[in-house]
Image (cartoon, rainbow, N blue to C red; front, side, top):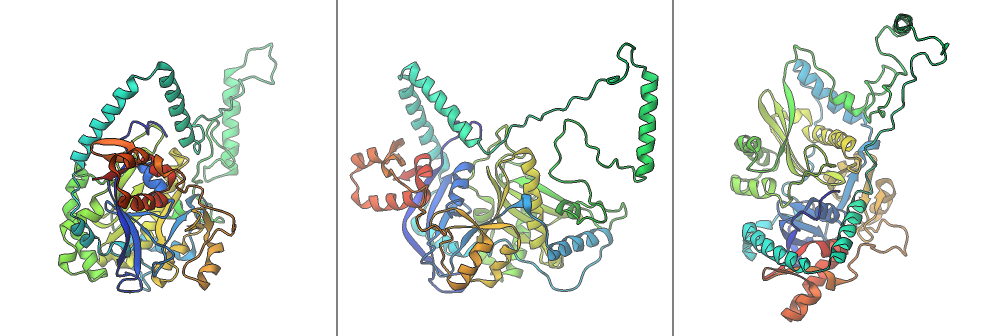
Length: 521
């Protein structure tokens, strides 16, 4: 990806040890165990790499379950949208929505609805207590100013180096961009040239334009007689690659996900429906203007669906967990048109918001964070419907940005029946908690039936390839200066803090440890 080096690095503050919480799944009072850090700011590439190591964010708090100790192990799950085919139950939900929009019909029966996550995620149920206890001051402006000062200082030092070193750095920078771009094929399209008129005819004579037009008209009429529907079967515009989304399915072919979602409504439709993608930023006019309505919907949802008392779903909680993101918005030329970062996908029905899907758009995936909706519309199975829309949205983004091809659904918890529904979006993979490789869910389920905690990688010799191998190369942000941990150790002489740094390095991996800045006070 282009111009990563120009971005400000991620700044994180790690909390030593493991935190114990009441489990939101099995209700064990102190069974949930996780490691956590506060992200003052974070690049989308760093967060992508972290979730590929089992991390997850709730607001600016980023945490990783201690998988072999927590009561309900939480496995990162991703769906492969490019191969996804909606099941019968998925199709029912989509058809139910279309009938409601077109005719106002309300289907009776079971409501197959689940939010993408339980309220605020069980691992951070006591997040407020932790934040208040540590008295974290998220003064990103001060940190940012200090960082700019430090970066300027680094630039001055680099300016003294030889031109040869600068040339080498440029080559390395280009190599890095090529590596980050490795998953992205060229956008160039091989164009098949159209044969020149008259080829195969008598070349000694100039082509007769009138005769050519007559031949074209005859051919067109012949094709129309063969296919009265007006579609020229087998024809494709030259020079254009086939679209990811096929034309509307014929009656003898199953309808695609897009056919079911985007089926045209009659002009006399009972309801008007649209989905808007809004950046999570109070500087964005659309986000700002819809904030009050979105917040009111959140309160209604939390109180009705999760029985939260009013004092636990106030504006502060809503803003901190669903409107405050550490992700820096990025808009590289080869990225999606909407850019990368955190977004609210708002579902508008007849001029009012009935659901909001909180998502992160990252270099290789769309990551679902949370969903809240109007309980009055539970009959529409909005949890299932929004997940299918997000899968379709990922496919849409993939057309412009080929490496963006996965849909992350948060955590899969096999020991919790309410959370097993995520495994119904196939094909999908679970992340091995020891080697951090992806394994098809079908291969994981037999092991999970026998044990809550499992290593999915069947190769006993396999290890975590991204593990921390050189902790002294970890980057530290200390007293307005950026330095490797090896240098910091000599300056600070703080043996007590070494265990926390080594634990952090082991959990984030070597790549993120060298790229992110670990804030040390």
